[in-house]
Image (cartoon, rainbow, N blue to C red; front, side):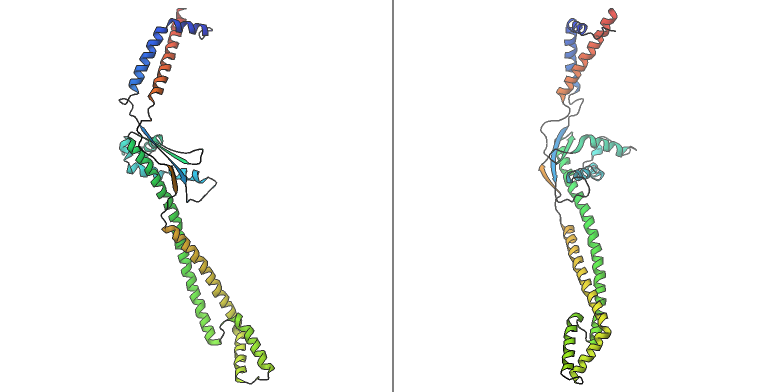
Length: 315
C-alpha cells in the first residue's frame, strides 16, 4: 500500500472519475438540503440579552459579573423556567420518567446558555422553536434573576432587622433598669450628676469652712451631701457610666436597624439591561448551508476512498 495515497494516483482517479464525483456531489447536496429542511429538523430561533450587575455586593474573589452568572445558572431559576413555560411539553419529556430532572436540565442547557463577554457583561442566549417564546424566556430569566438576588438580600437584611430589634429590646430593658436605680439613688442621696456636682460641692464646702460657718444650716446640708457622695458616689458614677454607655449602644443599634430595614423595604433592580431580547425574524438553527457543505465534502471524500480501494484492487 505504499502508493495507495500517492498524490499523482489520487489526481488521476479524480480526473478519471470526475463524472462520478459530480453525481455524488449533486446527490449529496440534494439529500442534505432535503434532510436539513424543517420537515426533518425543526428550526430554532435565538434571542439574546446582555446585562451588567448593579446594586450588588462582591461576596468572594469572583467578579460581580461572575457572581451574576452563578445566579443566572442556578437550578432555582431553571426549575422556575420549567414550570412557567411548560418546558417538559416543549422538550417532549415525560414527568413520569425516573430521569426527568436530568433530561430536562440537559435539554435546557442545550438551548439556554449564560456566559461572560469580553466587556464584563453577562450574555444570555436562548434557542427555541418559537421566536416569541425564546424572547419571553430570555426576559423571564432576567426577571427571575432580579427576584432571586432581591430575595437573597432581603433574607439577609431581615435577619439583621430581627437581630437588631431583639438587641434594642434588651438594651432598652437594661436602660430602664439602670434608670430606676439612678432615680432611687438620686432621691435618697441627692446625687444628680456625679461628675458635675463633685467640683461644685467641694468648692461650696471649702468656702463654707473658710468663712467659719461650720454649724450653719447650709453648711450642714453641704456636709450631708458630701457624706452621701463619699458613700454612694462611686455607685452613682458607675450607674451613670453604664447608663451613658447603654445609650451609645442603643444609638448604634438604631442606626444599624434603620439601615437594614430600609434595605429590606427596597425593591430595586440588580442588573442593567444593555441589550434587551426580542423575537427573531430568522432562524438560527440549523445552519443549512453548513450542513450541505459538510455533507457534500464528506460524501465526495468517502467516494474518493471507495474509488481508491477499487482501483487498488484492480491492480
